[in-house]
Amino acid sequence: MPLVTIVALCHNHARFLAMALDSVAAQTYPNLDVWLVDDASTDGSPAILRDYAARYPGWHLLLLPDNVGNCRAFNQALRRSQSDFVIDFATDDVLLPTRVTRQVAFMQAQGARCGVAYHDCELIDEQGQHVRFHFRRDAHGQPVHPRPASGGVFADVLSRYFISTPTMMMRRTMLTALGGYDEALAYEDFDLWVRAAHDWEFGFQDEVLTQKRLHPQSMSRKAYRPGDPYVASTIRVCEKALALCRTPAELAALATRLRWELRQAVRFRRGPEARKLYHLLRQTGQRRLTDYALGALAAVF
Image (cartoon, rainbow, N blue to C red; front, side):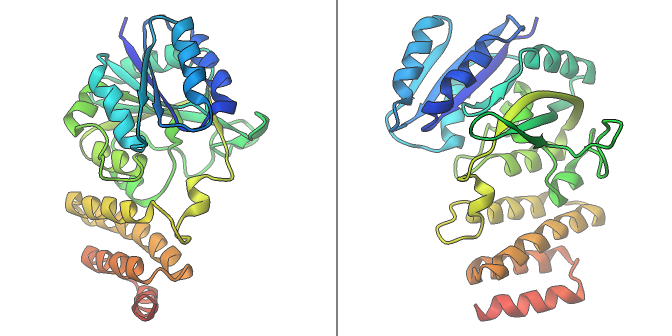
């Protein structure tokens, strides 16, 4: 039975911690390696984590004295752990009881080239109430267009957002080959998808096995606003992606992403970022007539 590491990452999640950690303890899968990682919380989270570590002696506790961000905090636990599969679990989310059991079975069925498995999830509000599902479904319960991608998804992850990050299970051999998360970035998922999908397959499991909590402070609500800590990382990932593109289809997919990011930068008058994005768009060789207007606007901010 494969060993599964759950890296439970916490930063000021005190009001959600009990529900999150109880969901780990309730997993039907018995062979778990649980790491409780606190990234210098200031809201009482460390005391709750200590209590759970005492309650479950097999769990590991890692209290970081300084806030180092998700990428570095995750890597610290990853390097200390040993397992076949890894879940990056934010402690404001919830794992449904059969999550690990079902996902391990799926990963094993996909074969060794499947580096990432992901699935649908239920989005919940701060009170834990249902909001919607990640994938819009038709009257028969089937995900509607665009259908979640499986297999070689490099062009897909370049062009559009479709994976709910909390649903992922990752193969350790893949994470080792990639060197874990890039600690120079402010967030991890887009970069991981790009680097992983270039050489590994992804598998979509048509089940709801996770609850993802929505926050007013979510990354999407900060994007390109003043003080946004993520935009520089997005540009860096796009630079990496450009270096990995080999075909016209891949370049066109990246151009779709760059075009969307460029519109956001222009909309919020982020001149330096808009100019960098336009420069990358030019390098893809995929500019459209409307892109020239965006480039002109970027030049005047």
